[in-house]
Image (cartoon, rainbow, N blue to C red; front, side, top):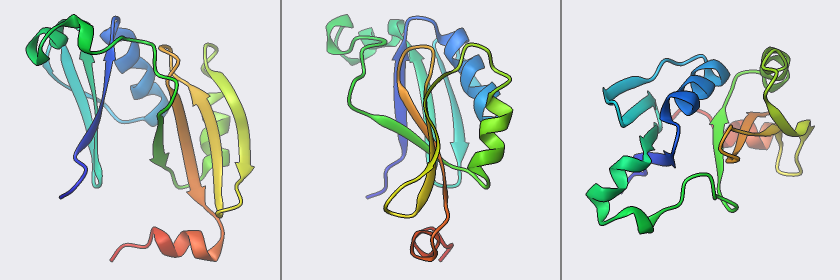
Length: 135
């Protein structure tokens, strides 16, 4: 089994897609007006509008902009450089500037426009780098 994607449900899909395109530098592929995604070598980030909830059983199964427990993480080449690039986004809500964590990753934590936590990180310790080497 492989984790394929993470999906965010939002009331404003265009705003959220634009934010992630700007933050990641990766263009989304739009499949419908209510669903778009970016694919990386290890998975995808999908964004669906609240209108897609009816396909899963009704609007009551998820609430947009109410996540308080998940962090969406992106492995980046240089987290400090990404931080400098993101500082140009005036609406970005930085929770934690680049900090080296005890497990060896240098992490930047911020919120997307819906309040979801996003972590850009770079492995900096030898042990952390080893965990992310291509096999």
